[in-house]
Length: 355
Image: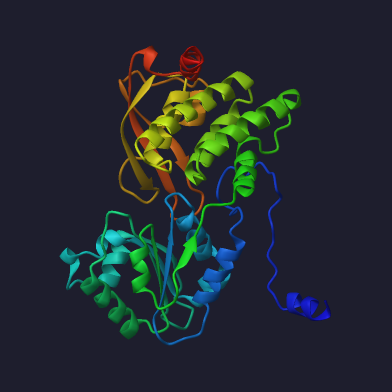
């Protein structure tokens, strides 16, 4: 035990947020994943002159990108690298062969940190790769050679759902698994309830319903953030029952299609079914605050609070906005439809009749 205490005294202190807080609905403070975060930071801070590449793989919506974004905000990491760039695998394709890949990734991505007073030129490049994109090995080699020559000691993190990116690494790939059920339920509960104790007489019933909703989401962080925020605004048993019916219905459809996770587009369709205004999803887009495109639109909270709805047939709804750079907004473009296509209460009655 003495040796163990000495070992702990040598470890850096990690401040933990309170388990429930009014700010727990955003991602300024990362929930859990402390082990994974420290493993990534340890890799990044290793002193070495050669280029280091860490692949991070895992299931969709498991939180891989969120962990890395929090790592990039860590002061230890920012003090170690002169430049931190968050970019995308779509730039590492054959068409870009021969270009200055560092410049291409920088222009097409987001510069999260840049310091001219660091005394070194080390870069940290984060590449978020989608399942559909296949990184071209020739372009990848050009990027690596550029980093070795222009920024010795640099590191690259590649995030993907595909295990084959492990071949790009100089270190063993890290796998990010979904949170264990009890941890995910705690995360969902903190979003759905927060510190709100105004309706204590319903807390036990709502907890039972919330646990059922969380169980159907298959560990989706995006689903927990969006649906948890909606539930938190309406601590009403009937509303929560309606949301559970909607989620169950979408889960049955998803299982019938042979899919085992809720994508963002499926979560968006679920959310529209919980809103009081009948809407049909036309398209979805993910933007950042730095994008030149217009970012106006109503939030889900405004719709639930019965804010005035635009008279035009088409409208934009902001489902969720990240609080951690790069600050993403997930926006859906919808059109108004006849009332029978929407509403949680309608869905709940339909399910009840089927039973």
